[in-house]
Length: 271
Image: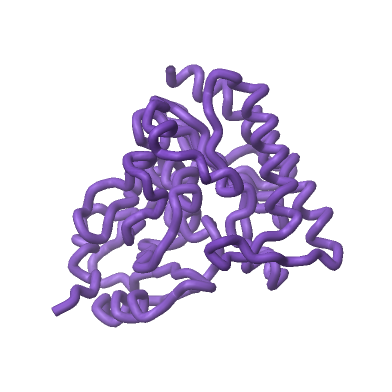
């Protein structure tokens, strides 16, 4: 099975690149923005990337279902019978796309038995591609360069904690978390880039104490975990799992590299 994941990686990376090219075509135009049922923004780039990724993954693995943010209405009564599936966010960071700050990604994950085992996160504007599969390793590939292995970094005692937080969804939870940390440096960026910062050792922790959906996290979780880090529920400390219930919302979570520190002690609690 792991050989299978490795074989698929290059095709999945190519699909992410194709979707990125289409996104950038639209990025350079006066695109329109509409609102979905939950009032989150939707652009032509989201839909174009969705079509490219779903069609490409169905060609690659006709027997494996694809769940995308833009086709998330599939009921759990059907999804619950899927032992494996592709989980896709065609444009993670639509708000960043609209603001034209470049901090948006294309996310593709393979889920096996509720766990992310393969992940590709591509940054359309820079061309950087983060990817990993269990048994294969985690890598960052910059344009025109060979892929470089990435791994999380230990946090020596007394070091300033490097925190990454959401650019568009920081909130009081993030403020309360960093207030308990002591000496820290906080950088806010968009999309799955926050996970990738932890995976490559550029940040120590990413607390997300606000709502996210499963397609927001799966690909990047695969990369963080293969790079030696963890993505866990802020309540239980257990790794995030996928397609386990009707709702596709994640619990609040913490992404970290150094497991020697109890990061959950910094999570603000009520009462």
